[in-house]
Image (cartoon, rainbow, N blue to C red; front, side, top):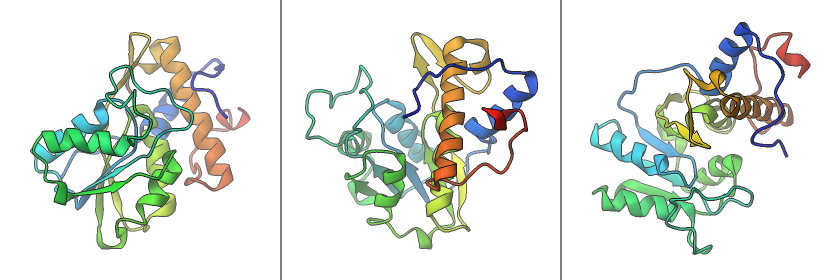
Length: 218
């Protein structure tokens, strides 16, 4: 298992620029999409960004994924902390319903325990062959890995629109503009790069097609 905050090498300016593209993905202007996919998680961003997208009329149909993670620790503000029987998806959906989003608009997947299963199990409850654009809610620095997971397992003609949120670790926000300025930011992003490289080589996600000779050494 790759740690969340691994030991990092000295990064050059070109390394930093390439890692932004690999882990955060290229920025795409939000737009109306056929559906929205929510990767599981316990951060409030998982439902706040969905509510924002819905209120801005970007989406109507929503796919919410997530049983309970076998490895991750819940966010301190997570309302489902005390009940291991409640899935992450159900807690997320409860916030969506409270915000006025009709349950009939929401597809719920509750078996998955990781990002790969979020996608493969979602295929059992939603027909992705009928959509052309998919908005994706996830942590900003995990966007590259999450979208590569979708691209590996869903129809190739789907266009993905990231609609992400930044996270805070030890009081420090990690985003595409500041991550290289702090140790925790560099560690979190470097960990994502290592996961993309590892899961790509395993065949779980779409492998990297752009990588410098220097980064290939790690």
